[in-house]
Structures are given as C-alpha cells and as structure tokens.
Length: 208
Ligand code: TYD
Image (cartoon, rainbow, N blue to C red):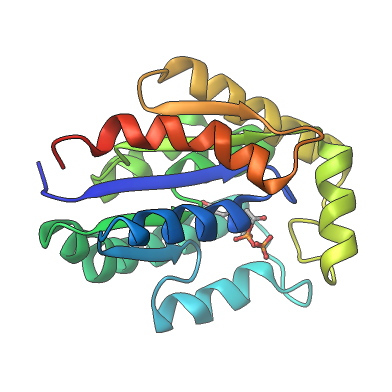
C-alpha cells in the first residue's frame, strides 16, 4: 500500500480524457493536494522517444508483440521513476492512459492473447486505485480527433479496430467494477462530464 492515490483515465480516441485530466488536477490542487499529471506512452524523456516511435504514422511494426513490448518498456520506466516515487510521498497521480489501454488496444484491438497481455501488465505490478473510462461512440470520438490535429498511427486504424477497442474497455470494466468506472459522455460538455467523474474521486479522497 502506498500513501498516495493513483487515478487513470481511459477511453477511445477523442473521448475527452486530456480535458478531464486537467479539470481534475485543478480541482484537487484547489483542495491543497499535490498532484502529478502524467501520461502513457511518454511519461519520461526516454518514454517520449518511445511515444514518437509508437505513434508516428511514418513507422510501423511487423508484429503486434513489438508494439506491446514498447508500451511495456515505456511503462516500466514511467512507473519506477515517476509514478511510484510520487505515490510514496503521498501525491495524487493522474495518468492519461495506463494498463487498460494495453488490454483494449493490444488484446481486443490487435488480437494478442489475453494471457500475454496479462503477463506484461503483471510484470509492472501496479494497478490504479481508480480508473475512469470515458465512453462514447467511435464515430464521435474519431471526428473530434480529426478536428483537433493530424491523425496518429492508431487514429488512422480502421473503424472496426476502434470498435474492438471500445468493446475491450467496456468488457474489462465489467470484470473489475470496483476499480473501473464507466461514464457515458456522449453529447456532454466538459463540465457535465466532470460532474460525472468527480463523485467517483471524492469517495476515495476521504482518509487520504
Ligand atoms: P493518446 O495518449 O491518447 O494521444 P492523443 O491524446 O494525442 O490522442 O495516444 C496514445 C495512443 O497509444 C492511443 O491511440 C492509444 C495507444 N495506446 C496503446 O495502444 N496501448 C497502450 O498501452 C497505451 C498506453 C496507449
């Protein structure tokens, strides 16, 4: 058990995670808490290099196992150098994507065996205290992603891939209902989404 609180945000492309991460960080800081905002892939300088490899449409891999090993390498460094030290000093860590993305993208999306994915997630050895899954349709999410910036290697995948990813998140959330909270964000503005997210976090803050 660490002293801090580990929160992750998950969801399909364009679901609005990054905005909610910022909202929640500001809310918690206004209550005087130390908050570390971080993300995967890319929570360390080395991880930013791995992120470039993984997301650039200029690169690609002949096997999905290469991809999952790169995500895991990024995660091992990120957890040992950023996440664990912050939790040990009692901070609240908010991570934009974490292990449930590996389950949804590399298992449900790419089709890697669940046992391989579970092995690599177990190797890291740290689950969040709470995971918020922002759920909306793949069409809506991808439209938002397109409006925002040039598409990365994952965003360029076929719609069927993104549908499997969404189903993967929902399936995993059903298997871990105490940890993973699904918020239906279709048609909601960021404040309305935050009104759904906040009660889940407030419940955990007591005693922390
Ligand atoms: P993301 O952080 O969502 O970037 P942006 O905010 O620019 O959309 O993108 C990271 C991508 O990496 C996203 O498409 C999901 C993918 N991903 C995996 O496939 N597996 C993983 O384990 C993680 C952490 C991310």
